[in-house]
Image (cartoon, rainbow, N blue to C red; front, side, top):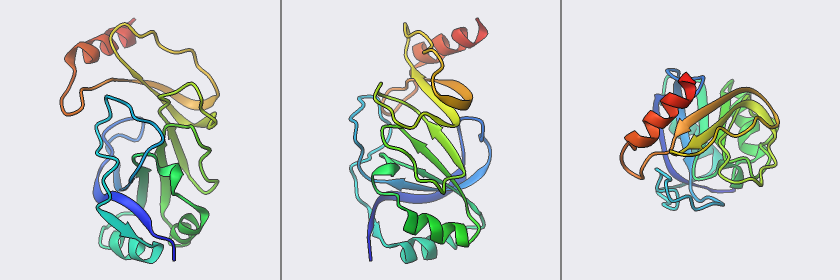
Length: 172
């Protein structure tokens, strides 16, 4: 049976985007197809290697039916076999992706945060641009329900220059 390489699985609140404040089980996949200098995730770590049955057993301890697949880049490993099993168990499935690869069809909520111009996922629920001081707000592209900006952070701490710049952009 296929094993999924994961950084971690944890239960918490969504802290960004239009689903902020909702309780979710986060399944963070290892590995990414990009190497962004500002990434806040140790995405190359493999702390868990679980098959789909082990993932189900692991997440059943949480009193929650919302899952967010994140990473690293979840589309590198996520497949219909795992998704079909989770849907049969009535989980709501969300993904946070860089958009380079298409997301599987069984995902209920798609958040794309492009870090490259080469994205193929051109539709979804949320398009979130990471912005640093001096960047212009990218023109809308694709078919997304919501367009958001997020300040680029330092690897392990807030970048107040970028935060204040984003606040000013939104106010304008």
